[in-house]
Image 1 (cartoon, rainbow over the protein chains, first blue to last red):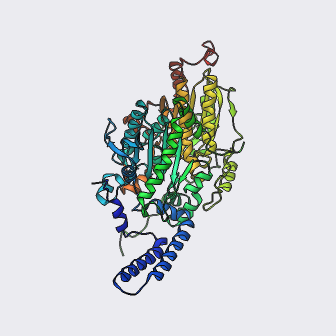
Image 2: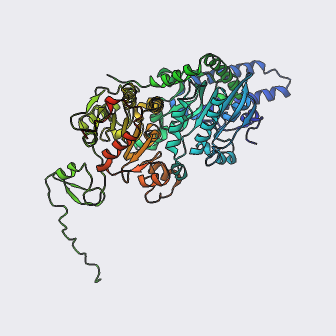
Length: 330
Length: 292
């Protein structure tokens, strides 16, 4: 089962952690041990536990508020991070998944369908990476083929027909670079989405929930509002790709991430996105329920503002928003 | 002593004869030595094998636009280096050296002109400027070109020759894909034609935005046209790619091109297409039949 409700438990059990999280994990483990010991013993460890607890919190706060861009990229790709399906599960009711681009295939790296969120009908579409090996293969690691983008367009046009607001969740390393993808027109599929999304007359809110991988993410990213989760990244190229091309050295990934200014905080400052959705300390994977709750609140507020606009206003607003992006000297 | 060990001295083939630089140009495909003045007169198409070499943006305009009618627009737009980007070299310095080498401020020339008498807005990429990559300035110039076309009701022609989005401007560059595509949706609503001409090479974020949105899409023969470059695909799949993969003929076969047109027929073909798609073009922007 891909959208397993017990994913919260799974995250707790997940042993995977990043380099800069090592110290925190060690302290947390000690704290757990101390708690276990104190349960069995007569002796009172409560003051030690309190102290240790304070120390862990302090370290967490310090670590996560001082991450560099590469570390944030790693968090954005964290294997335990909630994926599109997890958010859909938590945020919406009666999700009915719809399949197929009606031309070639299903495009399983992208999921989407009608759902209800806070009594509001929505079309919610997400790029899905896959949790275990089997699902990763099935989802092609979140790298969509043209049929995925064409399916997403079909669903967005369906929503447009029934005046249903659209939410897209972006999380992909990029559009898939492969022979079949090129044969079936990956470039055309991405371009068509950009063009058609500029014409839809219902509210569109796009959220980068993890990795906003270049054109593959943007293909579902032309919204009236573009949001990013606090530890999400959005970039024209991956730091690895950039290092390989500009530095001709894979080891320069950290420098490339720094140069690309790809974090949510960078993009808000650049005026490319509208809002950052805060994550629980340590990232969405430390408390997916809470992360979903925060995202849902942000979505509700944005949709409320947008549904007050007329269809014509929505189209003009979206076009105008992207028209203004990109500085130049004249 | 072996009979076979004696090494034959290589023949002097004469191919390395000292030739004054710039008088002859060697064809990239067949190796034919071409007299550079003749080569330039035929817009850099090899007279022996027909290979279409990259030409500069201004030469392309000479090829397509009626003599003396081109009025360049927005030529002073330049990059702000918004990210203060630096790799092995500062982006600012890369821009300066590109300007020195190409004599241009950016990777795109845009403006208005006449094409066999028809008024058009044309945008041509300059590959010599940072590989024709699209950053904020290129995106802005294309968008303005489209907006001018909507205002005066004339067609838009783009001639692409680009490695893709410009990495040094980060996500700003990515967003130019959405900006140009959105502008074209307005051109369509005005019923005006957009003809997209693809030349060697056209790749990445440029292919995956306005380029593939032409009402009619034309390519020059044997141009490399792709989303992901062949090297990226080879690295991902760890296999050699088939011969002719991602070339114009391959795209045509897969249904993504309307036509493959050699360079010397481009102007005539585009003009015919404009005539066929001219319902919304007012009298003052049409060709005067007596002139053509």
